[in-house]
Length: 324
Image 1 (cartoon, one colour):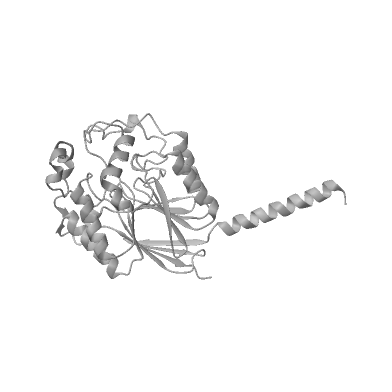
Image 2: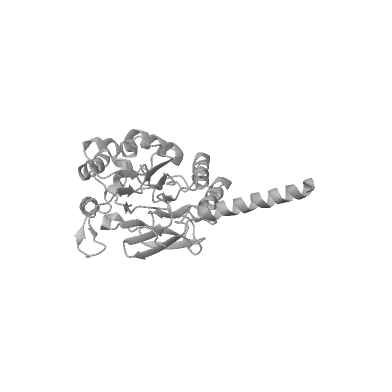
């Protein structure tokens, strides 16, 4: 056989192997969602994993240690004192709702609790301590990522990058339990759970490289973040990758007394979005921020937003083996 013929056969064999590998890495997944119940059936998992997803509790508790910061926390400290339960309509409040949700997770035998930001309304020491107390009492592994309010003292001087870094280190660090607050992954029952801080709507280069590495790993993964991914017809609140996100559409910077958003997304943000929604081993993403239950399907994969936990809302997610 001529050399060129051998090369062609080798190329064909290589392409066939690559195609076979690509087929194996794209997991066969079926989804269903009814209210706060999410069911995910995946050919890539061998055991049932139960995850409770909580976001936007907006705990406003504080004590005398907060006195020096009242000028920055006043508006959010007066918010959400009385709310209505998302199911019963009865009066509740963020602390009661949070305690009841965690108690329910324990009763249902949850393997993991995912806390997706805005668990506190500002970085108060008492608020962080309460979260730790409740989670330690429950005894369930939990993982946390920031929301835009968790680290924000309204009117405090500094960029979002500077303030987020400062208050993650000074107040929020116990909730990360030693994990890298920018991006980290843990594994439970064969599923990678990835937590990313997208709380200022932008993505750092290290986060892009992190998600690229996970996408190459072929291990099934679920992404948890505070700000949801852009989907067609959604508002700029679904800001990660939204083409209209930027200074011109920032309607909240005066109320929140913060710097206005930049002119628009950077290439890193769009590259992150494309890498994530096209990852063959992505199972789903979960986010909060918009205070709504919602589901968007992008490239055949679901992207969920959870209702606000200050009303008692949560997701109970069951990831189960898909029967042939």
